[in-house]
Image (spheres, helix red, strand yellow):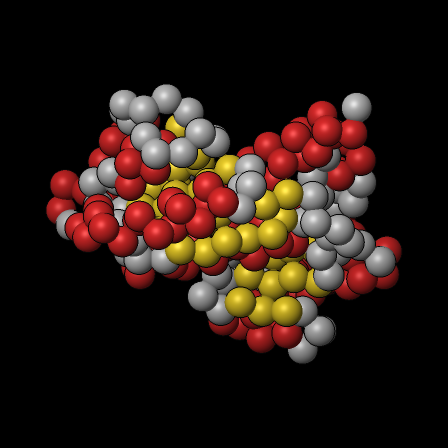
Length: 227
């Protein structure tokens, strides 16, 4: 019978140099992976001296990675070993409600891991529209490259933000809502139907994907400024 280590050797094929090829490092999706596999992956990253980001972790997985020295964010369900050495841009993360914060924190952890400064504005949704006035003012004054807007229910907040700011808006539908919300599908459709232009939409609950998109916006902007 093969040793478990041999099984892992054939199973796990890390893309350590993805950042050189695609401009962004590999991230490790935790759901469905045995703890032993995640530990082995973390060991390989540490051995090569590379930063590593793990997402969608269970409590058991977080406990194992914490024991190896990872920084854990239980709300985001993430673990990180190190992060980017320099800040290359700035992103604002806005949520409609407190129920959306888990997805927003996944975006924040990812953005900071990649080298973005993050401004956070949570629980400022359209049910109390006056709450967005101050965040919009701060975003305008702080040279933010893009805004990630996380919302469930009817998903109206990205459209409001896009109508007030002249920077890209990255909309993240969440699986938070009642009945015909359909676990985020109705929100996703609403965001895709956004009337203001300049709104890009990622998949349901995909805070990670939104942060990578924001990072690439800042990265292209930084490269353009150097030329």
